[in-house]
Image 1: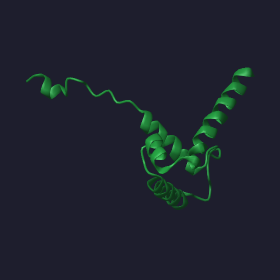
Image 2 (image 1 turned 135 degrees about the horizontal axis):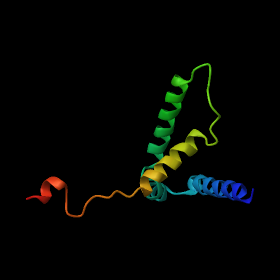
Image 3 (image 1 turned 120 degrees about the vertical axis):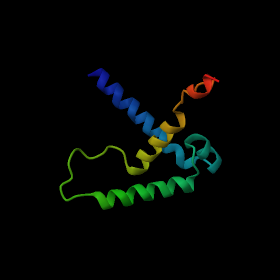
Image 4 (image 1 turned 60 degrees about the vertical axis):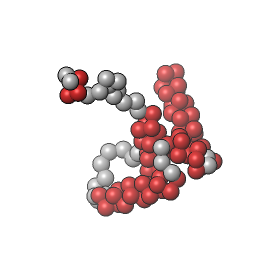
Length: 97
């Protein structure tokens, strides 16, 4: 049971760090998430409109634990931190030359 409590605690700490975005300046927000606040707001509006259009009367599965705003922030932070493994020598097509 201790492991489950630790996971819940870590998740809560992660969300509290994500939600601190409201206190960030525009430059800090861009540096952390890779987009400006205005772009983020437009992304949230787009996701909300798609969600509203695609909801059927029978909603299946559990309700999400994160709001749409939080889901977009988590996604942006993941994409921002994702490391690509671009080869230093170039693509395989160019290596033969």
